[in-house]
Image (cartoon, rainbow, N blue to C red):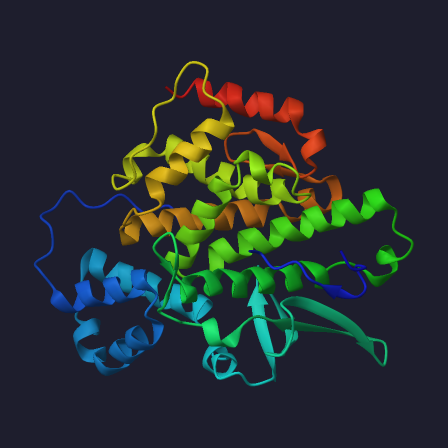
Length: 336
């Protein structure tokens, strides 16, 4: 791994208001088409429809109107104005907001992936890169996901990595011990992962969550930053278990008396690999991710821990997580 001051080569490879008890709204093919394009991450098609069908959309009422407000807001975060420029393979300067703060970045399609930092007249410049040719690429990749969906995850994880890196004071990066470097990487990885899940497309989000659940396989156990992935997986598991009725499309694995976090995560990864979520389900998952990311920046940075909504915690250092994992599994076994 290169020095933290050189190229960072780490590439990260809303509760719904209760629905009214009144009768369901009448069929609305336009609404259905908008929702399907949103869930599929067909941003260009979705934006074209929203622009061309303004009059019809303004006539939406009830939950359909509320959903459209949410879709517009989410689209503004998940398909920023610089997206198509980057997809065209153009090197550019751009401004991007994440977690309530905007930052100036440089996109270089010729980069090796991840972020690179340099200082220009004392000003820190951060260059980000990912494969422009994979942006919105519909070609099949793996596990039923497209290259574009995998790339979408990478783009926003890189943005999250850059955002977290930009908050680290320059002076604090000098003369780091090996332990300090490890803690920094663990924090950066966590921030990249949760940013990708929140800001990405619905399908990119599903890929991330599948991947992070899948990371409980033994072959990933020695990955230094593995708990940066597992922390997002635990958020997802806790959200589904705590709010079962909100997720009718996701069949939860049975919770045995001796269930382990590892076994449950892997069983859930199988359950969601080919699942098709509703707009309400995706929105709830996205809001749970936002809550985790919003609440845990300082804790993760300063103490190397992530705290979940059920009160349990995870240490980003796998070697420090033993007792905390035991408490998480104790909570899990009580949820039968």
